Length: 171
Image (cartoon, rainbow, N blue to C red; front, side):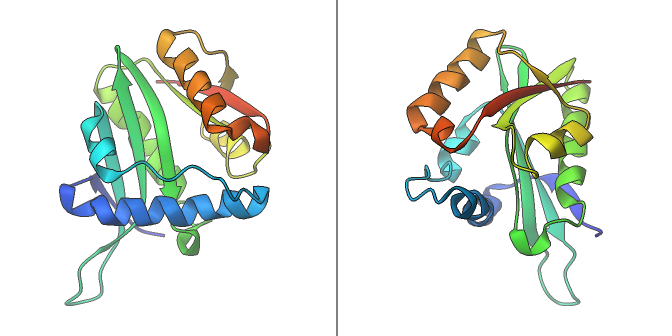
């Protein structure tokens, strides 16, 4: 599917929140997770160092384009970390997530990073296996930032729903 990828704008805040809620619903359903953590608020997301890229479905004549997915990459202590990738389920399995990941990798490379990490579920098909197909490989948390992310996931109770794994892609 053809989408336009662009940097997020403040006007995308409501859409990215809606997209994340809809995408997270797939995990909530898979795990029966009634206590799933809420999405990152748009204000919090925009206050973190890094970047957000949005995928827009081209508009029909006279209509505005519609955001259908986004990727959020943190840049902390010289490190790039893919924090969130979300695509509306109605637009899933059309290559939009892959386009967003590729754009995030290209942007991280352009910003001078030599690798990018992420944390995800090991056994969810659209998580670790998908990222492996994008060039990510299982790795160990080897920086204070990455070890802190494991602590955060533990505090949020994410391990109750399955094995979590860190993955790294060279840039």
